[in-house]
Length: 414
Image (tube, rainbow, N blue to C red; front, side, top):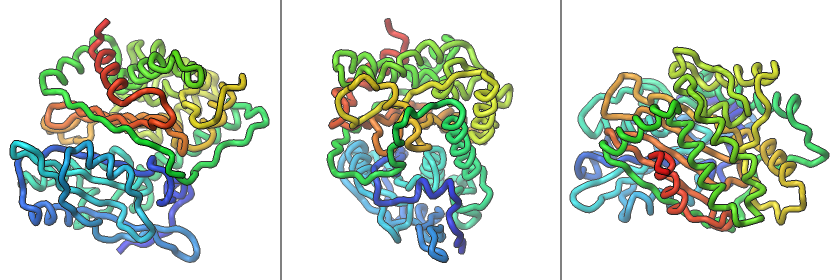
């Protein structure tokens, strides 16, 4: 039994009744249909926790995982429903849905709260669940309840160190790089007033298409994370270019196309290019082995040395018509939440080298609560799954438009 207070960094992610960006959904197709009790038995081997009060302050308390349910519909439909279904106080911060698909296929959709883990941990949890169902031993022991605990529960876990480093980095940027111009930052968390209309779509490439895509990206001297980030920004900028309300908000992101493609050490260009306009080296030969905490520290010290200038990649949403201060509003939003920074877990989830599973995971976020769009990409069993959700009420585009444009960009079709 683990019971401890949240540290200051974790408290930023602890409000369970807030906007949908605190929820992480990961999924994977299974090799066959399973009986519900088989899936439940595997799911019960995973670890979870709930938020509780400890001496008047928010804290963690380990507990069994949340319920497994069997749902109908497509993976996209179930994922969207999970995005829109908040956790409530007292809930286990993980839950799972088993979905029967056509032609004898099935899938699992796992939902976690960001205070407990991140996209990397959520995808690892899905991977381990699939391995257990396939009769294999799960590789990521940190996610199995009978061995140890979830990253968010383990004091001193590097996952927590990453968050502390990110908040330290945001404070550095605020102190050294940004003049607020008298504007107050947006609140770090704001209640979802129900005005959001989420448009969620996914596309899955075959093994052959995925191999060709990875080869093409590497041939251009880019990493997958950098290519995904640059492609999404170019597409979003192009789609919004005829809309005066949004084009100003996206102007500062357009330059990313030039920043992302110089040959760099494979692994972290997407992490720092979102913050600095002149990339500086991070990672070296051990880039995949470094964690985001060390990258954040290198970004912080590099910026302090003048190696890069602040790169505003955030999209100002819901702030009214342009009054000539678009850059200030983007800057205001950047300082509004530590989640604003593009701080993805880039690298192999499966450090055992299993060729069936992922090479990389990347997520791109703008700030809470005014998040305009969210992109996640992962490869599993040789295929690339690209997922995108956006706020229809805030952007004059559709998820299908963005995904189609990104695929064209990623395949370097001109």
